[in-house]
Image 1 (cartoon, rainbow, N blue to C red):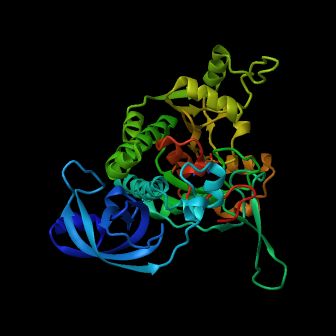
Image 2 (tube, helix red, strand yellow):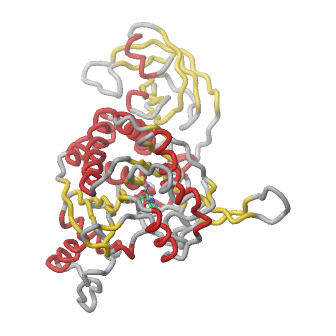
Image 3 (cartoon, rainbow, N blue to C red):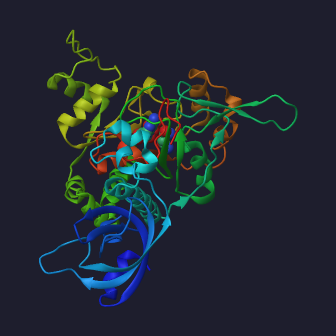
Length: 438
Ligand code: 4AD
């Protein structure tokens, strides 16, 4: 039976199995805390005479379930009074030295396989799993179909700078083919739309990032979707607004207990109440000027209207604004070839990044180029080979449904939702430059 069910067995004898997560020894008796899952409801106090026990042993305990003595509190209203105790999996007494309470970020990464067991990290792991349930709930509530895209791809989606090249076996001969790990599954979702309508995927993306920042990974979980019938940009923005609001609201319900156990429930409530505003790139540049956010702080140089705003300044701006910002209409040269242009000013692209305080960009999105000739022209301008985008061009030939779509960085979004400092604080086994284990 599981520890969470123990309260139902008050006055009876039960057998549980779990890991020893805490030991308190007194002259004649001891308390052990046994856990068999991530939450506080998966822990129980066991009271016993002195027995030889070590932290992180996997044990089988048989004993009487009894109400806690008056005035005492623990994870449950009951405790187990030990009868028999068997060690099923040995441990080593150096465990608490390897991951001491209050260990710094380096130890938590170096010993991730052990740190995972801490109360905080196991709650984060469970919340990450629940967040996937939330994403699926939200997509399915809009009749979207989940697609499983490939990992190995033959063309680039988000520029060549951070492509992971891999050797890929050919049909004949010995020469390896050029292949990449996917940067985004967008093209595959676009290909699926004529078959299934709106669709989505939750799948890893890979970027050979050189930057060691607190929001970049080389492998990240990417929740992407593609929506049909987006005839005007406002429809796309409405869909994004709906998506962000629905995710936060659903997560609050789905994950109420672990969010409370982690002490971040009220924080998530405050995010559901956060205002969502739309701001064009040109307006963002003006905001930087009025708020004293400079292109170069040393020389106090202001941004020009067509400058890209680097990550650091963009984050400073969003932190000052303190709202969820849908940042739109970027100069087209900053954005990928597939992004549609603004009919009112074709030098601007109909893209939208969702920016949040504390983390910055959590969603990249946009309306797709509809016209075949325009798409060919954009490929050429970007120095890309048409033959590598044969299927993508075909979509403009056979019943294009004017789509837009988005990619939500699950790890970044969750870093924001859980109020954490770094993406490495929430990813179970983070991958960033230089790190392959654990
Ligand atoms: O803005 P990006 O590059 O957009 C795309 O990939 C589109 N093709 C998505 C689409 O329209 N289907 O990436 C989307 C999001 C970013 O906003 C960010 O949250 C996350 O993916 N992301 C990363 N997260 C962690 N580490 C990295 N290196 C990331 N790069 C992007």
